[in-house]
Image (tube, rainbow, N blue to C red):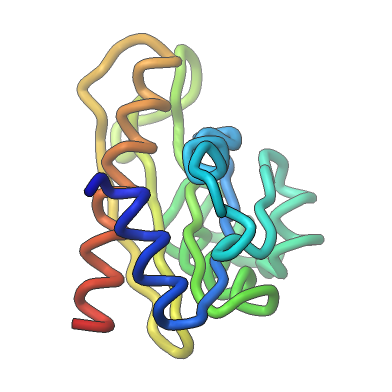
Length: 158
């Protein structure tokens, strides 16, 4: 059973719906999740919140968080995942740099902060892809995050 099948099985078994808020991954995680038959049984709503405005408007990220910590930050990913929980029981959020521009010493190209949320638990992690092509970076991030999400669900429910 692949990761998407595992996600589907766990969420349906627990009668949970998932919401995804993507920035740097640009909807790729949502696309992967909806490639599976029966996705409507475990997906509630997905957003591509590429702009600061979208993060504030749809995911309730406080503007001061973005101003103080930046769009690509642990704090922003945390707020994105938390904001998504208004729509569903469990969430995935991503924010990062896929290049070729952007990034800095702290967060180079290929950096993604991603967060998983469930009830009052939000787990934020950072990953730096070693890929160099924009599309390859996005695919690497999406695969890595979905693999981590399986682990998050198994931690919660096994």
